[in-house]
Image (cartoon, rainbow, N blue to C red; front, side, top):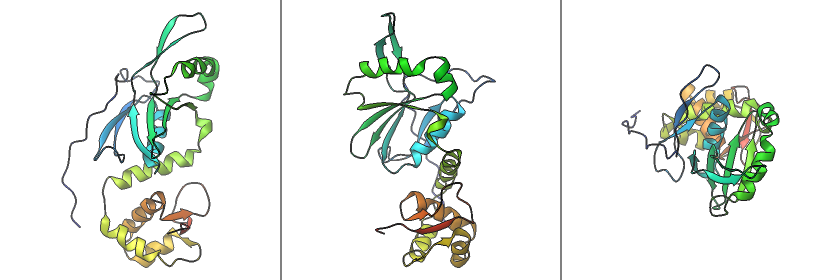
Amino acid sequence: MNYPSYIRPLPSRATRKPAARSKASSRGHIPGQTRQDGHLRLRYFESKQEQNVLFQLLAHQDVMDIWDQPPPVHFRDAEGRRKTHTFDYLITLTGGRRIAIAVKPAAVAERQGFRETLQRVRAATPLRFADEVVLITEQNYCPSAARNAQKLHDFRRTPDPEADKIVTELVHDMSSPTSIAELVQRSGLGGRAFRAIFRAIFAGILRTVDSGDILPSTLIMQEIGQ
């Protein structure tokens, strides 16, 4: 199996870089690719929760572009003072709709009155910048969804077109639920097949019967319309 040569990721488009690392939070960047990028691009995160959200955005088929730390939005607070807010991510969907995303722990958002602040930011956000403004907390997604998205990111780092093709052919006539372990055994590819099946699920070729962590015991079916 031939592996592609290393290509340096495109730089982040962030308008501000994360503050220096602290003991209380996790900061870093992820090299990921969207349809608009062409190849890998670095994107920053400033907390584990932002990292979880970024993995899920990169895994979503309908997300065409992700702009980390986009240009700030100017708004006025409750006392009328001029302030700025920088969203964590600005995404563009396949249909062209743009969504500005703020990521915060639910308890922090409640303690800081951030939902009220975000209402003011939303009112001041130009339509040319975003069509919608949303707050994402840990209550908006299952931990297993974040874990699955991170695994997908890891499995995408080493493309394996041969394994992808073999798995796609094996599931072409699948008519009943089958465990991932059974399909891996039928393929004869071992771990390569597991990774290919994982990619096929997020590519819309397969679907899981139940929610939760995607494991060898997970039951899968061919996606309707494939």
